[in-house]
Image 1 (cartoon, rainbow, N blue to C red):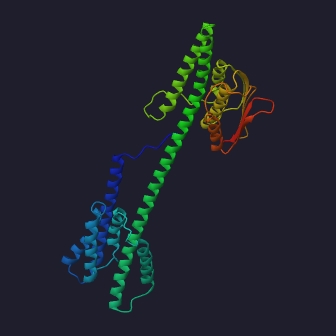
Image 2 (image 1 turned 135 degrees about the vertical axis):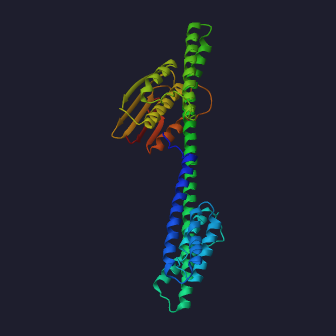
Image 3 (image 1 turned 30 degrees about the horizontal axis):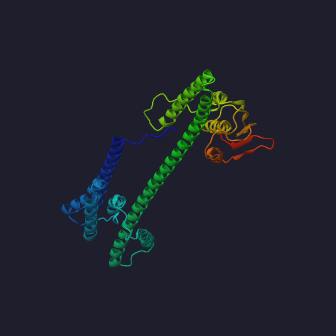
Length: 377
């Protein structure tokens, strides 16, 4: 699995600087627009120029100092309305208010939704209803400007809430993925350890019983224990190595090509396995699940039925994998102890793909495990 690399601090700083440069360009152009628009008014240029500059130029710093910039632009816009200069219906102030709405923490007592609805009503109502006289026109301008400010605030808060929700959803997905990965690793460890320890326990019991009478056979059992334990340690090291990004040279996960080795290890424990694999290339996760199901089923044969014969069928056709493992053993336990979680683990693997799983004694003796689940190539 390949994960996209997080954005570096340098790239974030670079993106912020680019936005600030865009704000600076917009501030200059807007100021020039105000200066050109104020040319035909009776207000002296010595007063109109600084007011226009106060309305437009601070917008270049709206991302750096949003609070003072909004206060300065709002005051300048109000002064322009009083002086009769070309007025922008608080558009510049709304532009400065937007990043402030994004940055401020959420306050429950601020009715953002009500502000948004009321602002929309005021903006559309003011656009449809024309002024009756000068006083009504001034009042309408003020109300329309407040509506524009309210709309900017509501939009900024909506975007902020959306970003917060997206970040929270991403965190939940990450936590879910971590939990699923931990469960997968736990299941893999169980399958590895249960299989290998079963072989080791069987061979250790053989060595104890024949140590005095047949020392060579006891020595062979110890060699099997050594080989099995080394292989188990290597596989566990590979599995746990996926948790370390700097782990070099990891071997691929076991798949159907690893089944012959599983058969050989089972034979060491007294279980002869007839293996029949009728499957081509499968996705790695599907092949791993099929291998683990066969491994657990064969392990159960070693634990409960050895010595015995076992038949293993793995078939993949039409986007569906079918696995059958049955033995002709007596069905009695070979090793003492309480029942484990092998059948539960196999069932969970099959259910993960939405498949079917059955396990139980055969009518003519022995035990049978059958699993079938779909997959996407």
